[in-house]
Length: 136
Image (cartoon, rainbow, N blue to C red; front, side):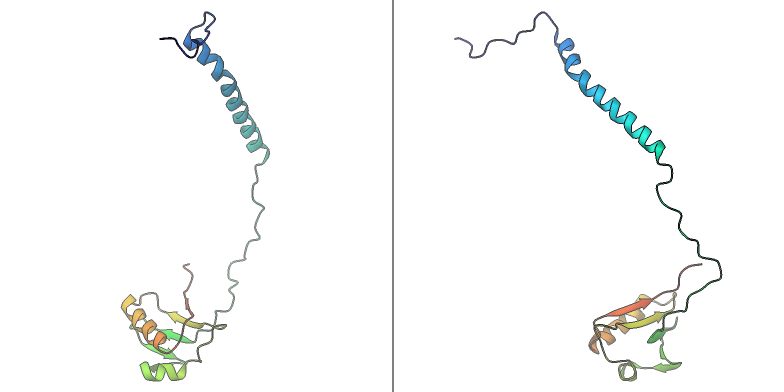
C-alpha cells in the first residue's frame, strides 16, 4: 500500500525543537501584552474622579408615606389605627403614575407585610413603594 501524503520533512530537527520555534512568537506576544498593561496601569493611578462629599448632619426631608406599619403590624394613616375595611377607604385611589408609599418598621414580621400586601392587592393597588430608613 502506498502512502497518500509524504512524511513531513524534518530537515534533521527534533519535534521539541520545532515546537519551541512555533511557540516562541506566542510567548513574545504575551510578554509584550503583559508589559503594555503594566505600563498602562501605572499611567492611570486615579481611575475615578473625586466625588463631592456630603457634609454630615445635612439630611434631606423624608418622603411622605401614605401608610405607616408599626412593629406590631398595626396600620396607621395620620396617626389613626385602621382595620382592613377602613384602610382601603382612607388610602388614595390606586394610580399607576403615583404608587402607594408604605413606611414599615424594621422589626415587622414578613407575615404582617404579606397580609397587608394581599389586602392592598384586593383593593386594586398594583404599584407599591416600601420605604426604609438607611442604616447609620
